[in-house]
Length: 313
Image 1 (cartoon, rainbow, N blue to C red):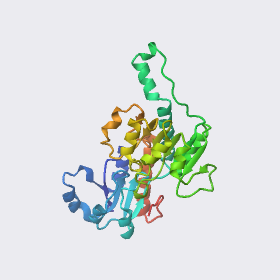
Image 2: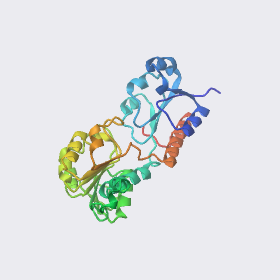
Image 3: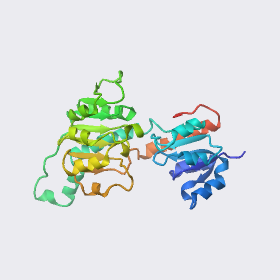
Image 4: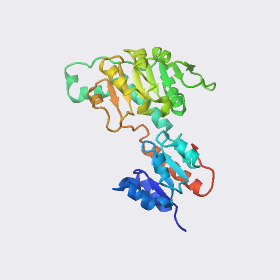
């Protein structure tokens, strides 16, 4: 039996690649020296795309694959996939929700602790010998502080659950109030920032949330405030954030995502009031294996004409 042909947009871990190549004829787009020529050569027979959230799939790419049936995304975010084009052309799209939710929430809380308690600075203080001469300066507690969560989806709920254990009052801003949650709904983002000491962004990416964290929001968060972003770099006005960090408009920030990652603005590298992560919130062995399995399971369901496990469209 002929294997279905799929287009792999970027590298997958070996355990996923082996599984895909056992079942499909895999065309590795990222290895092609001339992508246009490569697509012209193999595109006519490609029935599926396996991509990653940050790579996505453009309308132009999908148009070059006339037999395309499905785009399977390794990640939750689908803002880099042209969903309008896919919907208009009957192309199914899947992602990998739920399996990475807990890890992302863990990193959100970890970044908050790292910024507030200045864990990286404390590590350096011990390593470079300054502790021998004097105790380190005092830092900021986390427990009991007011937390504002921007976007109360799966990850926001898990962050709230964790910080409730820190005795933190939780408020949130979203498109609508959720009747199933015990937290305080604040419809105005400026008001939420004003009453929060820690503002944690867990929004989906896309046009509707682009630069939703503005200079006004950061001003409202204030000099004692800390911003944590584990969503998408697009959700924060990065120029405004850099200005706020440089001028101490806010106390600090913990960032897993950036506007132009991985080639981030080098001003971040000189700031001592920010903790940086390489978009690695879901980067555990356990979660990445589960994500890859879900990609493969969605592809298998599609080609077996079974219901998709986690359809986006």
